[in-house]
Length: 412
Image 1 (cartoon, rainbow, N blue to C red):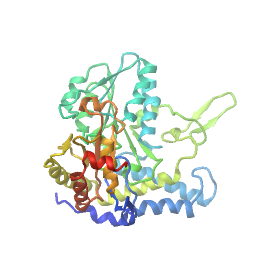
Image 2: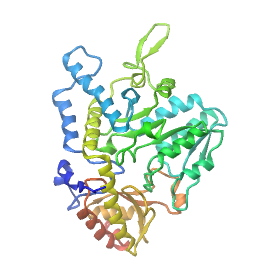
Image 3: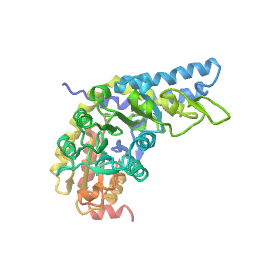
Image 4: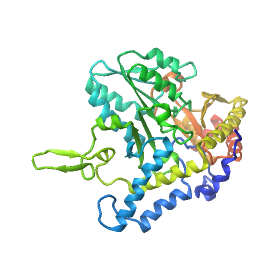
């Protein structure tokens, strides 16, 4: 396909117009942590606060009815975004909230002693710690998919790890450290062939390429608004209807019940409402809908192609640098994970920050993976469609001067 230069969309992001850091124009290479927000999203949030402030699905006013309709329409937008029915879209606080809801609302209810949750050593804490607690409460156990020498999860290794005890396969669609993308459709097929469910942490995948949950036959998908150009505090748990109907909500309150009686009898509302007790982050959900429409307008296939090309060009230059160790040169996404020889990861991150480059260093909330990589941590640059070649050049020049002496001088 023809690769469209998406850096033309930089004009939509106010921070890129004026923001400086340490005296330099900002180079924002920390998109795996959170993304910048386009004007369309900012305007949607501001409009709610300035012109539409009201609660949803509770008031009798025409204002409340109008905002409630917008709020529910976001489910339809997300349905188009990931290929599901609107009633399968559960609003959450983000991917972490969605994964915790899945863990305690489903896995804790239906897993038993000796059952296996199959996951990996490269998972983010949000896709490991809830499963640890589930295992502690139910007697289920964790099993890890063997990683290849480069840290990939392959369908072949998933198949080798499967048996009749595995009830849930819980994996990130894209590793937040190494940036490798899973073959979701094939892994779903393998899981279902063994009568297991497949739950995907989509935080790093959904913003970057098209995921059709029906086509891939994914059982659950969790993702965050703020990693896809939307506001913080909002996210989604997708689940197949029959699975959501079996799940229990984590919270009870207004909005989640149809009625209750003084004897303690509670009748919950249907999905997805039964999971959404209390007032939700209305402005965040409206902004999430605006972000999804914005990304679909650009085209997720265009985003993935442009991001991949920009990353490949950057990595090719980094391969030629004697002071750089690359850990994922062949990843399919915009995540570039590396170390500067002789420089502690956080020191390298601080030095690059002093040159106006924002990125992440450390263990990236994946605290088992450093044992596999045999390093205490790494530096992670993560690209998105509004990044461009000029920023990559500035980043490369800063890397050339990233030495122990220069990194230490930042703190003097």
